[in-house]
Length: 116
Length: 112
Image (cartoon, rainbow over all chains, first blue to last red):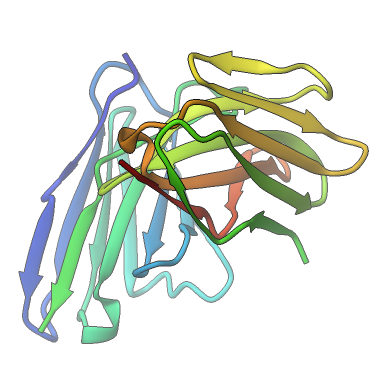
């Protein structure tokens, strides 16, 4: 149980284009999902908290107009990187929490984004 | 500023050795501490620790939390090459959203 999937697993795009990453909880409903990014040899940095049916909460320094998050259902959250630039190249990982009072987060396999 | 610090940053051992990984934290409104193992992709959950002094065990791995001294350790006994990974410590803190703040990780390499 507690499986989280991400799609795509890797993507290469040209500078200036937009890329959408999907995060799905496969066997449970997740009212809250989280989006992280990880640079090589660094730890995970929380970008935003995604709540089903409401606006995402972004961490300080994360541009909400650049990283659009939509949590349209209890099993799906999407992250869209708009007008991507090479500095947006990174490993993006989502996680989902099973219940409101739960502390454990289960992570998706990640998406490697390369912007050329 | 909330922070989680892990040590050592990296460690090289031989199969059969025992290793201890450290995690110290300073956060407001501490809720729980989690350990994850990250190989090539996303982290996989190992332990969640909420109370001091209660050891959690899973096979050759064990972990304990000290809320007075604000640290946790992860022990791995009889290490195997499959234990090679980055071990991440994360602390649940804050309000209703129960966010995680991650440490920098410890890179463990187990040599045959």
